Length: 325
Picture (cartoon, helix red, strand yellow):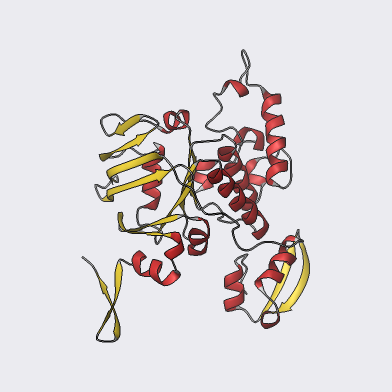
């Protein structure tokens, strides 16, 4: 038995498929006689667009640049190796790579969670380095938002009620603070609005965060960051554990932010997601950037070879693959 919401896995691996929606079995199909489109509609209860609808990007000014970033872990192992990149207003820059090749460390260094050991970050008129670091709160003050890859470890306090989790990291804002105590009414009103806009289920701001499904926890985290209207959004694994209908909404919101002139750095292990959302793609291997290409030139084979640090070439009429040093 295979339980998954990933349509590609269902179509590739099953003979028969049953669909559950809101706790009820709503359909049974032979896999050969159905399609991803039909299954998506059955899962959500309405037609779902499986492709990302976006216009050509119009990137402008560089909002963030990283220069020769390196970072060592607690064991002294270098996890980031001389990473440089530019992120422009009005574009989505995708970071592709097999999990564990430095993408997480890059997000943590850029967001101020982890200090760098070498290099510089230029952002919002500031030069950030090992000698002049900024923490995550200071980066937020400069209008950088961050959706972490692991919502449980870094994005939520699962013992908090949803309205409390919805302001984490921004709780010192005057919007949420009264003269003495936090402005609970403002927090609840805003949480209710976001739950409606992002289809968080159940729409109960008093429910403990731990009691929401993984997908609805993810919506709370992403809504919290996107609704701050950041200049730069760092987003890791945006649709991990999210149902197909919510994926469509999350993708639309990311593209909407791009079209508003914001800059988005996207990390995802889903190649389909990287190719569908990104305007440019950088590939990481073993902590280093090994290649960059325009998203319209990307395909699974090309990205797969780059992710393995392999270079494809034709020699004497035969395809050969070699791994570079």
